[in-house]
Structures are given as C-alpha cells and as structure tokens.
Image 1: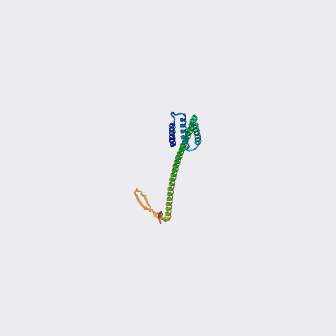
Image 2 (image 1 turned 60 degrees about the vertical axis):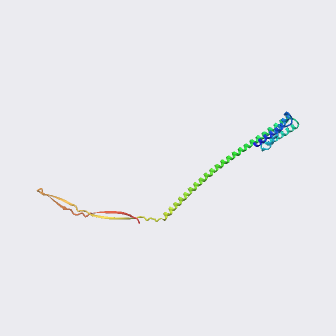
Image 3 (image 1 turned 135 degrees about the vertical axis):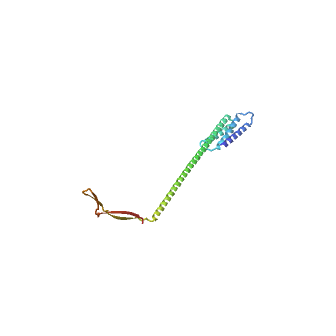
Length: 224
C-alpha cells in the first residue's frame, strides 16, 4: 500500500508539472481542469491495482466512469464540469484505496490472532502431552515396584516350602515317690512319792506304723 501511495504522489506531481508547462502565459481554468483530470487519472490507476473485495470494485468502477466524463468535459472545453468530475473521480479512488488498506490491516490482524491462538493451543497440547507422559512414567514405576514385590513374595513362599518342617517337641513326665517313716514319739512320766521326792522316768512310746508318701512329678520338654 505504501508503494501505491508513493507511485500515486509521483504521478500527481508529474501531471501537475505537465499542466504547468502547457502553453499560455497565465494558468487559466482549463489548465486547472487538465491538472485535476491528470491527478484523478493517477489515483484511478492506483486504485485499479489494489485488491478488489467488498465495496472496492464498485468504487473503482465509479471512479473510472467519473474520470472518463472529466476527460470528455476537457475535450469539450467544459472546464467547470471537467474539474468537478475529476475531483469526484479522485475522491472515489481515494475511498477505494482506504477501504482496501483497512481490509488488508484487518486481515493481517486476523491472521496474527489466529497464529497466536494456534501457538497457545499448541503450547497447551504440549503441556497436556508432557503431563500424560509423566503420569505414564509414574504408572510404569508403580507397576514395576508391584511386580518386584510380587516376585519377592513368591521367592519367600518358595523358600518357606523348601525349608524342613520342625518336629513337635517330646514331653517327658517323670514321677518320683518318696516314703518317709514316722519318728517314735517320746513320753515323759512323772511319779510323786510321799516324801515329796520327784523322780522322772522317760519311756519311749511305741513307734507309729504310719508313713508319709510324697510324690514329685517333673515335666521335661526335649526337642526331637
């Protein structure tokens, strides 16, 4: 668009120089009409080279029609009509160029927004993928730990099955009986004499036939 404006300005300047160099001592209304037509022609040509979307094609057509009318008015020496039609052609061309420039800017903004949104979505998808990968790695680690624990349990069970079974302990009961004979009791007899003479005679009492029986039980546990 900047290229079109530079080209347009150069074309207008050239047209004005040509109009100023036309024969005649003083610049009359016809000279001004020719200059207006030359400027309008430059703008219409520039508008015709831009993209034709939306209202631009209609404005381009109207500007070209006004330019042709201005040229006919100059050829017929209708100076006022030529100036008016040339100015109208210039305005229509300027409007077409402005709309096209706004459309280009809006499209560029949309493209930028789409690109930013796409980048954000890609970043979010990448983050989700990384989180899923981390979860998968954690699940794999837990599965490996569970498998290792299961193998250890199987090894312990196999070792327990292979170990010899210990025999039940044997209980030995020993009973000892002890018999004890009773000790003969001693009886003391005191006799009183008339002359108050005391004499002590000790006699042994017959031994008792009873005996005492004591039983002792010892329990001993011995391994086989």
